[in-house]
Image 1 (spheres, one colour):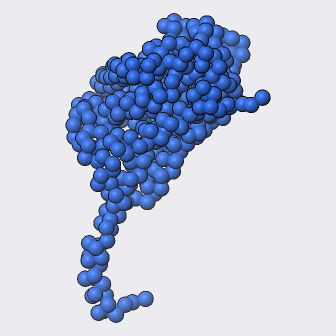
Image 2 (cartoon, rainbow, N blue to C red):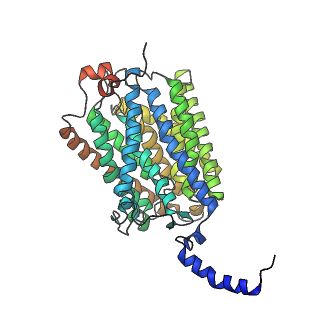
Image 3 (cartoon, rainbow, N blue to C red):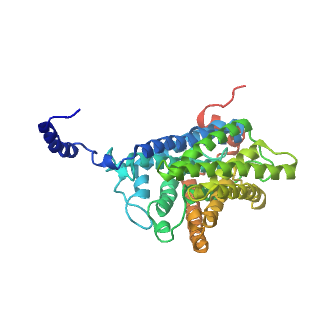
Length: 427
């Protein structure tokens, strides 16, 4: 259909005016609907990792008397972290050009509207995608201290840790800070920002808090390994959004990230279970699902930079190294990191961060030695910052709440009734 000439002439004049009068019309030119749709989906997948994935995973590992307290910790951390991310967490991590920390220009999402863009996606989408990372990272630390910590201490520590530990490290690596700008550290989806930081803090906090009753001797076994396996399956699926979404685009790199993520997890399970079978005569379900998390955590920093063979190597390495790290933490240095956050997330994240310097496609033909040094600087800085700040926060919060640890009777009877007035099971 052809319009009359005078209507076409009017249209040519009116079209620019419509663009100027329509908020976001110009910004929409940069919008890629495919990328946006994928990151929206990935955001849901990453939140699914915490609620319900991590929540159920940890709940199955706890005693029956404290199963609800562990779930309450995960839910509460999610809510506190999300609100703090809005207030100033996002701004500290992703605004400004400071080498160490961002500024407060984007407090309460100031300047972030429907028309504002972050690359090819709306900044609102980037904001909430990164929020889900800020949620799961302190939630991982929940596995270090179950069954023996006051609920008030959990809230205070998680809130302070997010702003003082997570936000600076996030800025160093992903927000244009010194590790990225000065050393070119490679951390595609959070080997340093998420896993090394949370794992290190978990180890320090568990050491300060002390072990569960009976530790370093036998402690109560997981009350429901099947529940843990269900949670691990949810984490596995959600991790496709975690790693695949970190490309911030719906493209081949995102597809490769998902592929190598799956390969790494599968390989880690095979290696871990084989070691258990050889050493103990039986492969366990809890061991297998723990290996899943080890393989997923280890491939995270490398998932956008390695191919399938790289995923295979990282998964096999994680399955072996994390298996022995569990025993080292509990039996050699005698720290009751109850659900093995450091041995799995910390060691796995550090392992993948270092191996990416050797296995990454873009450095395979170049000088891997210089990248190795850069990765090592990133690991040392992350571990030192997380460990130091965690120790300080633990000591301060211990004073504020009159001791972070619950009394002996509460620990014996379980936190569900004493802290929340509920029971997970009524018999």
